[in-house]
Length: 54
Image (cartoon, rainbow, N blue to C red; front, side):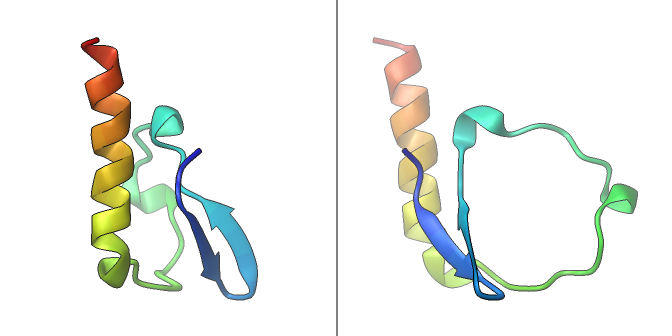
């Protein structure tokens, strides 16, 4: 239920429960910036974390 983003004509979903450690060396070069979406990302993390303590 995370926010959806369009990156290089592909719809992607931010799924906070699926966050995992990925070594930087395993990633390719950046293809987009989600800086303008920071509020939506923080809200998704906040919703996930606040439910964990209910």
